[in-house]
Length: 154
Image (cartoon, rainbow, N blue to C red; front, side):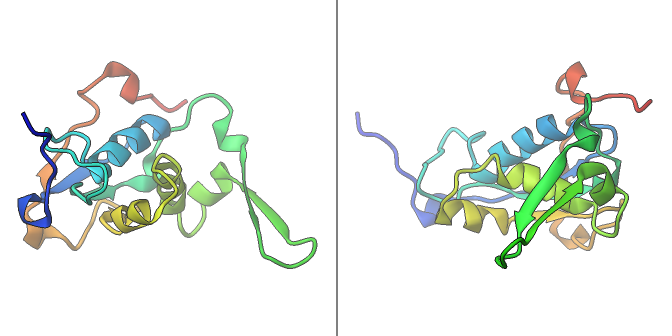
């Protein structure tokens, strides 16, 4: 019996849309990373971009457990003394709240060229509107997969 290895002709990509309202960030990022890599498919091949195109809406309403809203994101500008920081709460209430979800998904993928290519299949929107209705995306209900995926805000 030979091991199956997918070729570009074997790959079928679909479009899925996920509503992030009330979903815990880490659990959402884990599910999205799995879908982007294609690990949910029985024909998964590690060196091919087999994942689906994922649309995340309501990214500004994602939930964080514990004190994670007060934790910082750090980055460096490249200049001496150029370390910067912002809390996740500042980013979620700021102009680009989708960046918190993007970073969470990015950090759950491997750090290689293929992962950067797979990240181009991810679209994140802060509101409920998205311009991808023509692709007829299927709705993936993450809330009903596990009761721990949701959290009521306090």
